[in-house]
Amino acid sequence: MKDYSEYDGLGLAELVHKRAVTPGELVEAAIERVEHHNPTLNAVVYKGFDDARKWASGPLPDGPFKGVPFLIKDLGMPVAGWPRSHGSKFARGVIDAEDGGLTRRYRQAGVIPIGKSNTPEYGITGTTESAALGPCRNPWNPAHISGGSSGGAASAVAAGIVPLAHASDGLGSIRIPAACCGLVGLKVTRDRNPNMPDGFDYALGNVVDHVVSRTVRDSAAMLDATGYPEPGSPYPAPPKERPYVEEITRSPGKLRIAWSSETPSGRPIDPEIQAALERTAALLKGLGHEVFERGLGIDYRALYASRGPAAAGNFAAGMDRLIALVGREPEEDELEPLTWATLKAGRRQTGADAMRSLQETRMLNRQTLAFFEDVDVYLTPVLGTPVPEIGFIDPVNLEPKEVNRRQGRTFPYTPPFNYSGQPSLSLPLEMDAAGLPIGMMFSGRYADEATLFRLAAQLEKEAPWKDRRPRVWG
Image 1: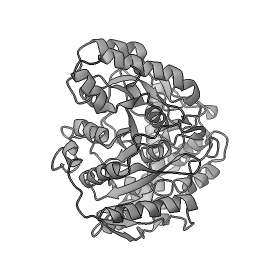
Image 2: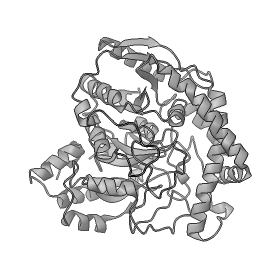
Image 3: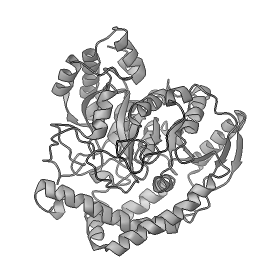
């Protein structure tokens, strides 16, 4: 199927529905592209091709993505019989006995998993470069990062290997790779997609799962398919008014949109990113929205400091569960320096430390949420710099403090909306002079994905990106 990569997920599913192509033919097209591009990109780290062929030949649920090839991130999302390394040497021998809850929902949507996508060790960094799995490269320029921690998913989708792929976001891990690779990447509202992989809320509500995609409609349709409450969930997201695939057909109306390049450090962002931000604000104004410059104005230093003890303790607790599964403690050379330091820090936390951390973060989140009392959407870039080269943020060889310093400068905007639980969306509206994407981030009120989808569909029409093609493609 030579034009396979030209279709989005819903487009491929329509071909299956019309019997113009079979799921097996789509799987073979995806496999061919993995084999052709993966030596350059290192986006797919487990090839489940035999299973995919078997699933394609059997009965499939009649979901919106029936027969569409799909990738699962090699972090936190179990697939029965497949390994789950978490991007780490320590967890390489772990094989999952059954599908996770969200994996089952993806299957019900009709997709066919063909493999696992690359991720940094335990998803800690905003770049996908690990000692265990190696660096994942950007299809626009393989010398540059694909972002993280869903870097393998974004690289594969941008290259046309699959039209959409599972991704997760704890501090920006959907939006950052979407921005790096020129994709649509929505961090959904907390618990919009229930936290069901194993029943433990490892990240205390920070991490959410969804997809990266090339079109807005694929993101909307997949969230319609997976984003409903888990039975017995104590914290279900507020219900939506109508399907998101209907929202994208509706006008967003005149929105109040604040924009800013304000950073936690107070340092200015790269001039090229600043210029792209200002062009986006002008575009929105030209579309009839009320657009004005206003920063969040929150106490970033206090917010990030407040989360530290709980995040470290949470990581240590998650590692303890993995250690029980592996059957032994990790050796120091089995973990990267940043991971090792985080584990040691987590084990030093007391119960009082963790609870005080959660309480302080909850109070500080009120600053973020209050900003949206008279603002519909908040616009910033996703990155504060152009997409870095491989090795600039190197979790394997750099000291942990230097890794975090470089991450803070490169990815200054995403974390507050994980802490507050609000939806936040990256759109590929701009390109830099070097031919790399620039993602713009639109954050909305709690549980208001609908407004973001309506605005995204408007921007996709007014400033289309679907015909841009990276160097590594199709």
